[in-house]
Structures are given as structure tokens and as C-alpha cells.
Length: 376
View 1 (cartoon, rainbow, N blue to C red):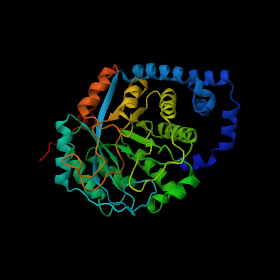
View 2: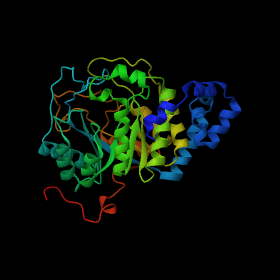
View 3: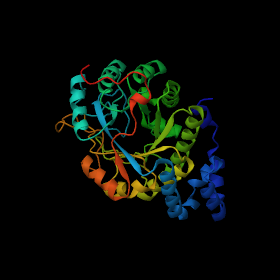
View 4: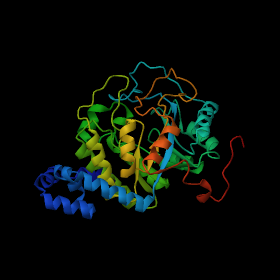
């Protein structure tokens, strides 16, 4: 059974009735058990008064499972061409922005900036336009970077097992693919183009699981729908992936909508408290999952969240194509909120009692052959 099938079978009316009927004692017990059957109660309104306890438990659980480390990574934007017309996105097909794609050499030059800043984990990002930046192009870039970066992730257009396997073979070890919203009806009103196929997007993550990527990253764009519903659906998705693809680690991201070309206004914004609630509840439910916070969030909030369950943070991010070498004319996908340098973010993590790490995995542990070096 696919996750699309499981999601169709969810009785949201029954779940909301259970959440609304939950007593204080039932909710407190659910928080302390953190049993998969109790997932709805972790996001119920009755859980709001236990947020401090949840945060303390999440912080302690993270230290037990991960130690005090927080991994740093950076996104590298390869192309902003897109065939979709998502109402909230700065790269949408109808936006009047300068379109650009990087050559392999240009991508390597961008990556070199990140290397000099200390990064050893990198996330390759592109708009969803395989005709403008294809699997062949991704394979060429990832192959050239594999000898230098110990972790290479992709956040690109959905594809199939054959394409994912090609990318995995040249060094890509993680796949991130946001469903954007798990509300099927709302999803249909927000997307135009190939991305409008709700089930196909879910299926692409399962193709990544079948491929055997080391990490499978999921998330919902916060601000599109009620955050409690999105958080529960996200948890159910993580639960499904964790059970079916048990060799892979699940990573949860919490991207809140930020200003972008087009001026889309989030209909149901998630507050800082809501975001914190999601993070600590998911940590309690998924002790071994990665929790990722990006530079979409303000610096002060990221500093407060770092001890509460976060295991991975981006730093010094540019969301334009070619943005690390110069101010790019291609336009940002969205506005970054935490504009601190990577070194400043690392110092803040240390000040919060955590240890910033630039590398926590070596490709040589996964493959028999030694990694190639740039230029070989």
C-alpha cells in the first residue's frame, strides 16, 4: 500500500473528534508515552499547555540519540527554470524573473565558495524543469562534487527509480521532497503543471526509498493549511517511510512561507510557538529522525530552537542561482531571514551549548572505492 492510499483512508473527522475530546490527563500521558497510536494527541490543543515539558523531553532525547552536535549544510541553486505555476513560489512559470541555469563549471565554482567556508554537506536545488536542467546535468554536477563533499543531497523535480539510482551511484545520498500540503483539495488549487499530480509527488519519495538513499527528507510548507493537520499528516508520512524503508533515516523540515515574487500571503500562518510545538512533538514521536531548520527562520528563533531537537541547520544560504559568488540577477526563490555568515551561525550554535559540525559522514564508509577528487 502506498502512502497516498493510507492518506485517503485517514478519517480526519474521527481524529479531530479525538483531539477535541482529549482530557488533560490523557494528553499528558500521551506526551510521556510518545506512542505511535498517540500521534493525534501530540498536536491537539490540549497539548499546548505542556509545551515546556515537551521541549525539555525533546532536548534530553536528542542528546541521548545524537549527542550535542548540529550538522551545518548549505543549499546550492542550480537552475530556476520551472514548468509549474505554484501560486506561492518565486520560481513559478508565470513570474517575470531572469531565468538562469549553471554549467558544471559554474556549479563547481559556487561549491568552491561553500567549501572554503567549511561546508562538507551540500544540498543541490533546482526548479522543476527537467528540460532545462536534466537528470544528466544533475549527474554531472554530483559526480564532480562527490570527491569533495561527504554528503550530497538533492531537492529537485520528482523522478523515477532509474534516475534516482543513477544519482545515488555518483554520490547523492539524500532526497528531500516537500509535499507542500497534505490537504489534497487545497493542493489542487495551489498547483498548475506536472506538480498538480498529488499522488505522483508522494510516489516519487517512495521511489527514493526504493533507491536506498541514506536520508529521506519530507516537509509541508507552513502557512498553506492548519498547522496541526499538516503536522499530523507529516508525522504519518514519516511513520510510513520509517516502517517501509527502515534502512533510511527520515528527516523532517519545517519550511514556513517567506516573502517571494508574486506576493502570496499565507492564509494560515504558523506562529513561532506553533513551529516549536511541531519540532518538539515530532522529536518525541521520532527519536532517531533528523530535524532540520533552514535560514527561512530568524536568527534569534533558530538560536532558541537549536537545543530543542534540531540536528541540522543551513547557514549563509543564497536562494538565487549563482548567488554565492555575486549578487545574482536571477532572483531569489524566497527571502532568507537569517542572513548571518556560516561562522556566525556556528558560533551561535556553540553558545547554545551545542557543537557545530561540518562533516559527520564519509562516503568511504558507504562505498568500497575511494571518493574521486575534483578534476579526476
